[in-house]
Image (cartoon, rainbow, N blue to C red; front, side):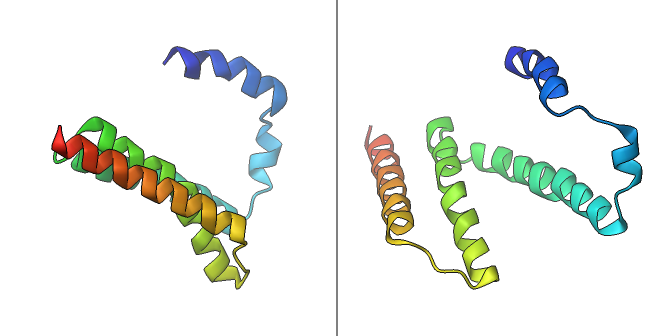
Length: 108
């Protein structure tokens, strides 16, 4: 909470919000913002709390490290871009380390 509150002045200084900017947005942008607010953040948090009931906090949080890789993978599939070798290596490293921590936590 302290980090969020302390970030507000920095955010307003770097990205000043003007109401005229919001008025110029079209319907697609408005729907995109609503999708981000409700589906990406709202539903994702509800699913995360659902997972927390079944897994340890450390295990559930480790899944967050895989998100950037899967987001990039989905973006590449959708836009027909290629994934570089470095991206694959990074994704495999994060996946293997996540699995190792998960397995070692279950054995403890």
